[in-house]
Length: 125
Image 1 (cartoon, rainbow, N blue to C red):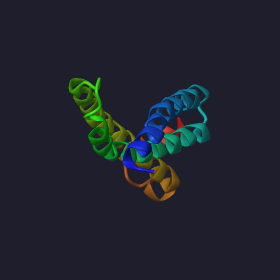
Image 2 (image 1 turned 30 degrees about the horizontal axis):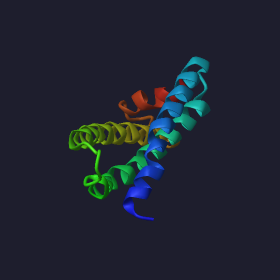
Image 3 (image 1 turned 60 degrees about the vertical axis):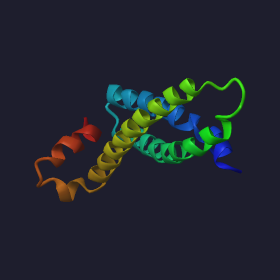
């Protein structure tokens, strides 16, 4: 399996998975259930990790298709610019989800720190 196949195989997981994680976290806030919010944080963090190989296989995938007739260079460039923005946003979102999970796990030890209360409220409502 080469980079192009890996890119095509994985590229929809972060998109669909993040949408699912977002729906789950909204439901968790509506129901005020910390375990549902925690599940969504795990899903979002996992999707951010999956987004990394998708991003890094994009350039080799581009090289394998750029000389095919009918492939517009401008379309590839737009796709690449969107991917750069997406990986930044996914990385930030995944980092926030991971920090939230860590703070939630260690919240008794972190309760003395005032800033931790901000993160712990994400899971306690």
